Image (cartoon, rainbow, N blue to C red):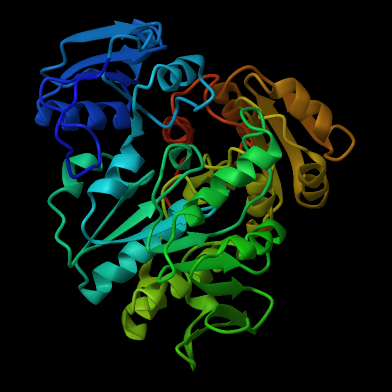
Length: 466
């Protein structure tokens, strides 16, 4: 039974002397452990990955952790608190058991929302949330606004959150798994889109409900920003508790918001409409990045950022690594790293952004998502598809009959070698895998870095200036 203690600012029993169990030695788990140790708790950490896997990932416990268990998640009985990384789903039997035992369950994001004294801007969505979050951060930086960027983007959060003053703005990328454990909502909550994803972990209604969580606890003075072009985002309108702003690439929206009008990004705030910037000024490829920019404009205006700062950031922002990132040229082709594409929909967006004939590298671990749109996009834009990793077979079967050349290999290295053998002048070799990296790499960034290194080692490789 948990000992009665004074309540902390996080709304939890006092941590001094508490026995805390942390699931995961990843970035969030280590962040949680450091915070708990600073509160005076005794901390045990557990991770289902093997010692070798954790060593490969560089996942070592912070100094002061009393016990570390690898290869299993300990039973929570006997602990006063369970703190979990987003990688541990709320349906996990140990999490369910903790709740049955009356043990509080918290996450990094839930704690951050409780501890934060400043204004919180939260951005979620099936795709585009990282780029949108980083772009809004660039706008705030350009405007000289006191802010931090964190959440699923930006590494450790609890290490910084308690030092943030009330005058600052906290810009958070919030994934669906981070929203599993939250019981508060951001003051400004944006949803870029909600499309089928992660159906290997959640059914569709549950996945949508997790995205809905970003709105669930807003007060009447909160602001929701939704994508009017996205069917499921439109369905979230009745869940809005405060004001509603919308964005669209199809033309003006009702009320405040931002939209694409011809080639101009236009904003309306408080009844005042103004052209912010031309879409052609963006450095990022693809219409999906125009959508990200329009969403970022709506968020920036909701934060009362000056229009000139928003426009400057739009023109200067280069995009994030592993998102249609040009690695260089080799064998006459441009090699593009889009390792972030862990779903077929993201790969379709990448193919629409690439104008050259494409040699598409598909692979990794697939998520039981429909492949029809990907097959159609590949038919129109690809002259070859090279499929690798665990998902090589289903991807190759899906591409058969749609793409002239379909090859199946084991590894990413073999996929790069096969692409180099058939690349021609004017091609784009596009790593946009449509699957997760977890069959061979701990994160999509590691897969992208591996791809870049393999390409840089090709004969005749040349870097390309941004």
